[in-house]
Amino acid sequence: MTEQNVRWGILATGGIAATFTADLVDLPDAEVVAVASRSPESAKAFAERFGIPRAYGDWESLARDEEVDVVYVATPHSAHRAAAGLMLEAGRNVLCEKPFTLNAREAAELVALARGNGRFLMEAMWMYCNPMVRRLKALVDDGAIGEVRSVQADFGLAGPFPPSHRLRDPALGGGALLDLGVYPVSFTQLLLGEPSDVVARATLSEEGVDLQTGALLSWDDGALASVHCSIVGGTATSASVTGSQGRIDIPYGFFFPDRFVLHRDGRDAEEFTADPADGPRNSLRHEAAEAMRALRAGETESPLVPLDGTLAVMRTLDAIRDRVGVRYPGEVR
Image (cartoon, rainbow, N blue to C red; front, side, top):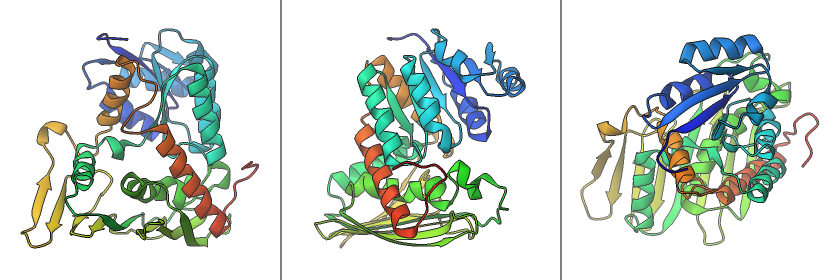
């Protein structure tokens, strides 16, 4: 793959699939050529909405489509292992929505499939591809605040969500942690890597999923992180990174920021703002662009969203669920 358009297939037709496709069609070097759903009617309606030439009423047909370069998997995360696995086994490259899978075992299976087949695989962790987050990480890596000593991050929605909602459905991997908590955990591990110890508490629903979860992560060098997620209260959805020589504060929407403030000891605060040329702060185009860049370069992994990092996040999420007692129906760990 060199300079030609990258041909995309879309697997699933829900809200996030529509948002991604709408951003994707704005990229001049992307072409959406097929969509698949277990509902032929849903696939056809989605195809008509976005002008997609082929609509499949089953996943297998998309997997067999040799004119698809990469598949964006947007099913509920409880189906990521099956959906992404089917695509990889058929030789398709895959961009898979977050959370990557239900647990670390499933994630490791997908990574092994991709590496064994020489296929590209990437978690759609759009935060890691966001220009402002990349700028923040570069500042931290360059020592702008010294050695990172602590991270605080939260993500909560007010709800209320009825028991029938996907966020409370154990069969769909419901709960605050996997859907929302993956962001604070991923942000923390972007800066500090995988923690050496995890302490967590949660409030569980009658269905057995976490309504809100708080975790304290620690590292052997003494660094700490406090992360919180909720589907019963709207939080500040902010983050702060404290180092030995300063601090970076990110206001509302830390995982898709349009600004952040750098406080260096003995210096005036510096505000960094997004470049308007980067597009809306909630655009998913950056993760799509990174996947296409990697594909054209012949890479099977993205350096921005490395698979080992994805596996490490899944291990932390597993550890948190172990501490709070959340286990999904039929789950094998």
